[in-house]
Each structure stands twice: as C-alpha cells, then as structure tokens.
Length: 32
Image 1 (cartoon, one colour):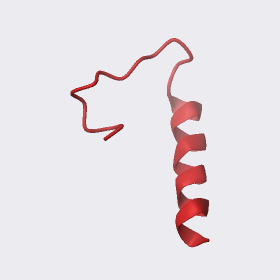
Image 2 (cartoon, rainbow, N blue to C red; image 1 turned 45 degrees about the vertical axis):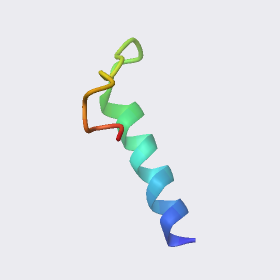
Image 3 (tube, rainbow, N blue to C red; image 1 turned 45 degrees about the horizontal axis):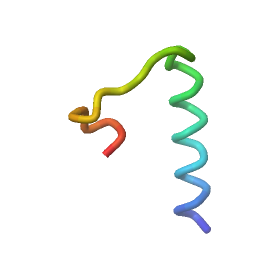
Image 4 (cartoon, rainbow, N blue to C red; image 1 turned 180 degrees about the horizontal axis):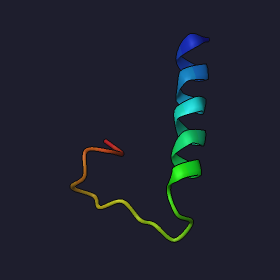
C-alpha cells in the first residue's frame, strides 16, 4: 500500500513542476 501511495505522489509532483509539452529523453534516468 505504501509503495502505491509513494508512486502516485511522485507522479503527481512530476506533473506539477513539469510542463505539459515536456518529454523526458529515453536515456534520462528520471523515468527509469
């Protein structure tokens, strides 16, 4: 349960500070 909560929070934060038209590179360790 904790893992899911953490994941959701991280995803929300990313969407908050990341622009809507921003696309992370495949070689970037931010999505990996």
